[in-house]
Length: 319
Image (cartoon, rainbow, N blue to C red):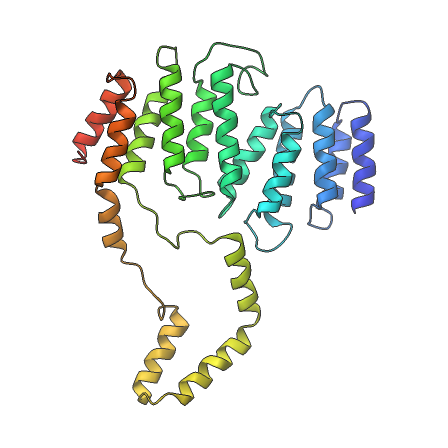
């Protein structure tokens, strides 16, 4: 399908407009074999770069197709490899900025959908939002127009989606990188007219960083999941080795049966103490308190958002 798809893509891009008929053709060709290839994904970026108007139908297709390529074109599914992340960033950052809202939405949706993405991709998306806030220009600002330095409603929503996404370090948890980003944005926009939802995100984010926890095995890296897939594909040999080891053991028959039950249930390896991990994560450690003290004392005064944060921490008995 790739040859027909790219030919259709070139025709669609020739006049900078994708008609409903051309979009239907791209959908049929792209999904005809159920796979979006690298060549097809690059053709879609080429079209997007020349469009003067990106209607909702095009945006939906673009986000869907690029996400499908990045996350599902190769094993393991729903994983973004470092190479795919590097390719994706190069496509949207060819001139140093994310130019369109559809590109930004594509990045955000991939981070949201993925079981895991490289930290570099998640941090790149957050860096783009930080740049838009500080420079007042970008796809979240009325199509790229320069505006005052502040945090808009659109930026708050994107920040929340990315920071609490499943992809990247700390699934659904706020990492130190994320927390320090929130602090930088707070300091840079404190005197500006930010969207009311910004204060909630700041307090929620810092509190989550201090009290949250993430299990060591909450996420599988791209390499580890690929290794597991290969192991499952070779499961007949693995089961044979397991029974061979059981036969050679001096353990009693009931013990061997228990081993087999645990092995089949997946409970024969190290097990997490979820309650203990949660209790430990809920407590604010001395190192975290030192970090918070330094962060809040950066300018020698406690501002309104910092007061809200301290009240939340006190109400939750974290300080």
